[in-house]
Length: 124
Image 1 (tube, rainbow, N blue to C red):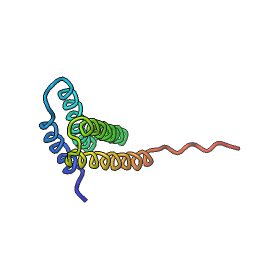
Image 2: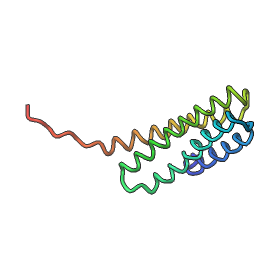
Image 3: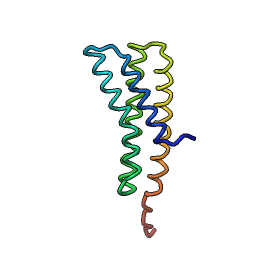
Image 4: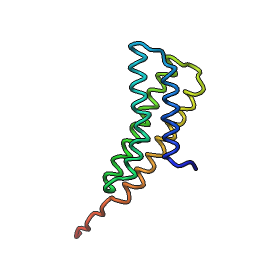
């Protein structure tokens, strides 16, 4: 399995290539900016999570990765429907965004279970 550092970097670089094909103009600029910010944020926040100061900090940053992956998928849906209908790279990036959501959701669930404090027992 490819390390997430590499996978998220490739995702960001592919996003940059897609953004370069979006026509300039008011709508294109907004969509490009939003998509590029979310797509490049995934890997940046994953790297931040690797140096987290605590398990809470790690979980918080993984949650950002999950949300940014979801947002990237949303913008890819717009790009696909509006501009690059039928574009294989946009479809592939959408699939990758969904897979990243699943990965970060799974990491978040596993790590949050580890830190869940046990409830004190109460007398009956």
